[in-house]
Image (cartoon, rainbow, N blue to C red; front, side, top):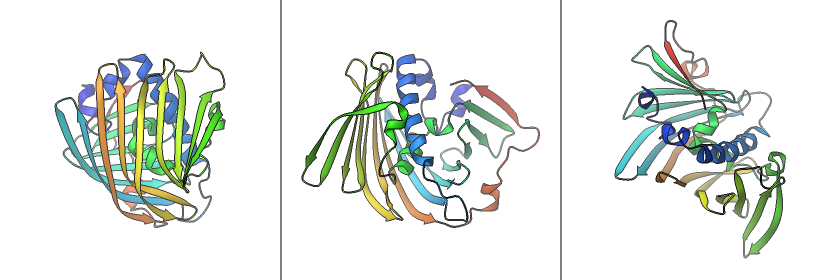
Length: 257
């Protein structure tokens, strides 16, 4: 039954099945989520971002292509992912959950915990506009840094070593553009690597239009390529998105993170 709710979330079941991978992702993406909402606007429509996307996810012999749009309202820390293909879905994303609903069926799955942690392609896209990443607030301290031409590479470690599942993080910027995030576990093995490119400037930040996300797990590796297009800033979101709720009578299955 869980498989029906993970078309867009990815292979959530494999993450849930392995505690080490789960804790690493939770720690990293909680950090990314904190980054995204740390400087959100407080009034007006300027805090809205929407874009179309194409995701290509390769895991083992399988290759899935997912098309849709994202609608984000940073003023209230809420987003909606509208999936068009291959399965019609809508995902309501908040700081406390991700709710996957099927418009053609009275059925939904609610994943507890930060909804953004389940959707790294969305969280990292939004985090790309942040200059500071706010990593200190997540219990990391800078270990060292390097300057290579126009690239600043910073290396971070948990303040309390031995207790965190993440052993270290590397973040690289070219100018103000986030270009690389790499995370290793407590044993030094790379568990996540993200490459960002084709940035578009807006306000004080740069949004990456292309992401390459590589996840290395105990059951295999996953590669995800994401392309964003038609970015729209500061527009009122469609009413059916801004006020999206589950229809009365929807059967909701609770899934613990």
